[in-house]
Length: 189
Ligand code: VGL
Ligand code: ZN
Image 1 (cartoon, rainbow, N blue to C red):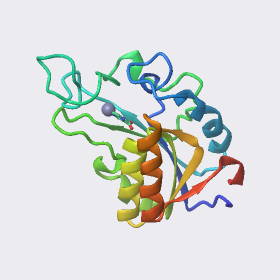
Image 2 (image 1 turned 90 degrees about the vertical axis):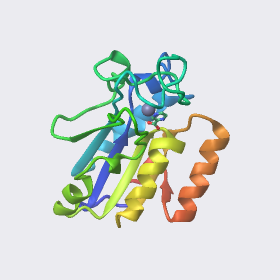
Image 3 (image 1 turned 90 degrees about the horizontal axis):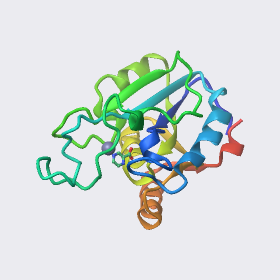
Image 4 (image 1 turned 180 degrees about the vertical axis):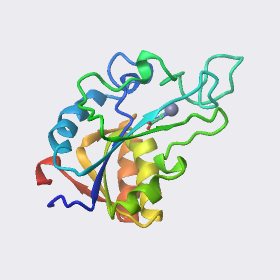
């Protein structure tokens, strides 16, 4: 696929906590960095999201004073775990989104942050190319919402990783059925 100026690259949650040594490590999470760094320069529009939780976020488990969520505390605002993975290229003129900031809402999708669709439309973006973490949560929900917002969606198959193999495969199937196209980074030119 030839990348056009109507394409935007969405880099989802490539943060320390989702990589080796982090609080919620995804198997081979850090492996998404090199394909993302490689394709980034081809895009006119780049969006980076971060999972950016308050320390009492409803998705956290383990601390009885907290709620009973399903995740170990991760990506807490202003902690090293919430920073971008160090070897990820992050151009300063990109657009940055922080999600998961409401203590009472999960907010897996980047489209839960107001204004993103309008911002992209104003710049003539019609297609969103997604890479990052994690396949069955933030990538899945962002991809499905992007379709709902009227964008076409491509997922870079070698630049995403799942929390677990089986749920990752199911998410891929769900996205395919919804109309998401999967492409290898080598086929983006
Ligand atoms: C995510 C689990 C918990 C994600 C966020 O970014 O996909 N996964 N919070
Ligand atoms: Zn989270």
